[in-house]
Length: 421
Length: 215
Image (tube, rainbow over all chains, first blue to last red; front, side, top):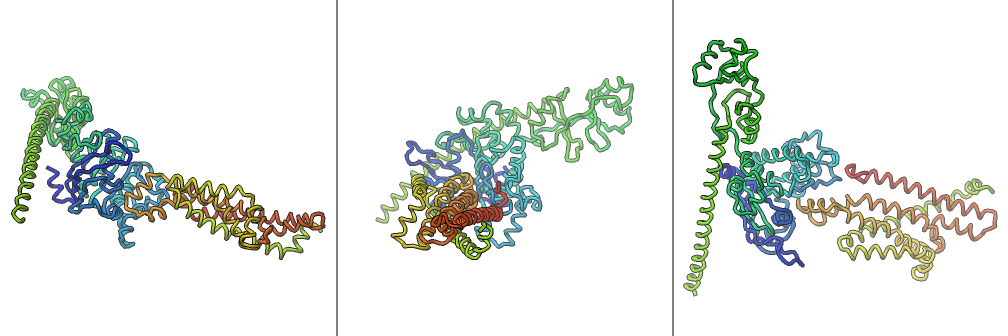
């Protein structure tokens, strides 16, 4: 599992929320009621839920932009509930929608803010700014002296993330950071965030109302309903295949199986071998291969072993024995890193229902067809379902054990008190 | 005597009056700016305090300047004191109002961001809110200065400094040979000073408003 390996190399810190509650003065019910959650070090957890469900409030209680009415917050091993909020916030990165960059400061000044506040030396701050710009994919020389309004929305958001990460905080809070950019830019930024997280292993809390964004980014997703009640807190796979209740399945929306395809790569499913021949092979060999009866189609590879043409039994004779006119050109291939959704797309558009899988340099690796895809998806969904059921069992057992221990603990404490008295 | 001959003859006196006029307005404006921004900073976050500050300064402005100086003379006497007090009070309104409007107009998400990245209350005010509110505050200072230029002329009534003396002398000796020249030179002097100050403010704006938020 990636989670365990992440935790081993994580530079992030664990976050624990205990009975976190917020009641706004003058309102009847709590805005957030008794949230209990543990976020592992180096994990990217997405809070997702309808607007007004309190997900943003919950997030803002972690860096105490909103003071909790009751409950505890622990980051790492430290209880930060009563810590000086200004000091706390310098250790917790914060990125918000529409970037929140200060328009009167240059990009460099914006990024340098937190490192300067925590007292880094001038030289260190300067090199850090360059490093951060580099990290988020902006050329330092070009963007250093620009003002936020001279940047596009996507670039502003990158600088916003750079500023949040500048003082190397173990925890990063992101409040709908990609909500205000166009879909294409959002997609890029999401990919960037995934890349960043692979490099940095921060503990990230990410708030969004877009479930697809949650699936794409989250190691785990917390689906929240009103008052920030956790409807389900689990991996994207588990939520897609085994939603806890009607609320979650309603939020997952239609096409859970299709969304599931986004989570699996072609490399994870069976790639079948296909009869191949090279363009330089003697024609007779190809004839023999096609006539041998084991296959009625071969995939012709070019000199770099890249898929070139699909060749059927009748094609060669119809084309009067020349390869140049025979067969149909390969118009689409997928890589091993493509999602199953991409593969399905390619298979569906192919008139024979298969697509060639290629390696890094475009060389032939195998073929995925409709049948393998279907079988694999069925197996995947079934495995997910079993996992989820088992997971729920475990949770129940754990809970039962905890209540048991708690009861015993109380008795034990009472007993020892009695003994010392 | 023609107007230009008059100016030629009296240029030493006129120049002193002009300098005194400018210096009075400048000094009062500095005090008004400091006080006004301070009042703005102290009151902008509370609805009623902000409104109270604005209303109070508006009320001061409705008192005719001549009456204000007349009222101050029995309390602080003649000369510089009533001039400085009156000018400062009149200068407050535009500064206070624009400071409050400017500070309240700072995008709340930016204040949220400033808080979120760990800026203290003072840092937020000095490094984010005031710089962002500075353009409207500067406009307030500019408007106040234009106003004070005219009001400073009234200060001569309380034997205060400035070009007002020229005008008052002219009015007192209406019908005499130089009456019109005196009024005219005082008035023109004030107009020229006002234009010069305005030019300086444009320059100050260029120098102090960061490129990122310049209109």
